[in-house]
Image 1 (cartoon, protein in one colour):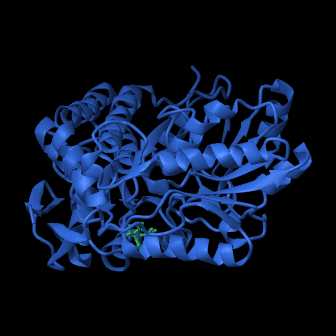
Image 2 (image 1 turned 180 degrees about the horizontal axis):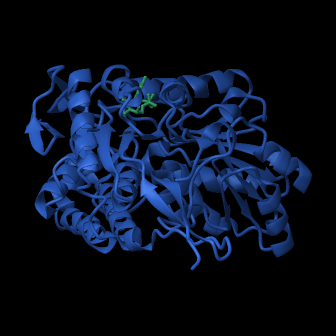
Length: 482
Ligand code: ADP
């Protein structure tokens, strides 16, 4: 056990009303940290402090360029402490150390990007003739509640904290109870750069207790959530009762269409990054490959070779980017993924490689490639959230698009071809919030991200996300003529 971590509420490091919780190391299945566990009372204290910060105008009255500077300074502080933050992230989340370092760098980019945008949030003037002066202002909602998952705890929190603060909202962040410790970097950064008291609160607690208390609090003005469909539905129901807007990012079952003229060698990199990074626990994972029948067999072999090339072990041992993969977050998630593969095998799916738990103490699963998957099967319909990729076969473009679009989700999609016309036709036909052409995960903090269908609504990242945090006020002024 290496340390006890506190919640950050009202500018202070505090213990939890619900005591503390043990944070496990997914690579060893042993407890590694203890963290204060917030209850509804702690949440109420954080919301009251955030509301007071907002009502006193501590962020709102600041000149935006100065508020943006504070946001950027937070990112700089995090970058300066990247090594120890990444180490904590790997210990509590499991991902390879090099991935954890990438995640810290990714989190910093959100502070850089949204810090830069703080001064660019402008209204417009609307001509109404000589008798009126009319203009709009974009005002922060006030208290922004942000409920964070465990798969990318830093990047997901950073994108809402940076955008929320840049627009002048006081933010209450509920981190995942599985990965709360690395997120203390946001509070430490706020403290170090002198963010006004009450502008940011970072706490953890159980979802049904602290999370639900935050989502249903009457003084919360806006909610951002990333996580499962079921939890998203309960948060949206709470938001409906308090009549506040929410942004939901709920996962996916995303497909890459691979045509017969695609660069199959380059696609191997997409497979490695798309489904085996973070042990596949990525909402926008490349979880289905819809391959043209003429390249299907070759693709099966190439993808299996990628899977077999990965060293599987504790993330702390993988400091270099390479063919390696850490554990999954929990035994529950791993067992669910293993069970889904076993069920698919009983239905006739070919488990080309992987599918089982390796003989290691933590929550590991072998990198897995499934072939002969049929579109209606559970492995092709439900999010596995593990290192499992399914191959499906198509004959013509229409069938490829039908298969790719044939789930309840619509987060991202991809098309791989050298034929521009085919690529553009696919980008138009695919129902997804982001479409990649010839590179999975193309894009970055600048590009809007969010789902169609059950993948949720609203957009994170990019300039679009800023609109989640502001409401429009129209000012109409009657001008008397002399
Ligand atoms: P998973 O099932 O993969 O753990 P969840 O969607 O349940 O994902 O969790 C994402 C975040 O939502 C976590 O911070 C969790 O604590 C929180 N959460 C879980 N249940 C609720 C709830 N009923 N109300 C609010 N937040 C919740």
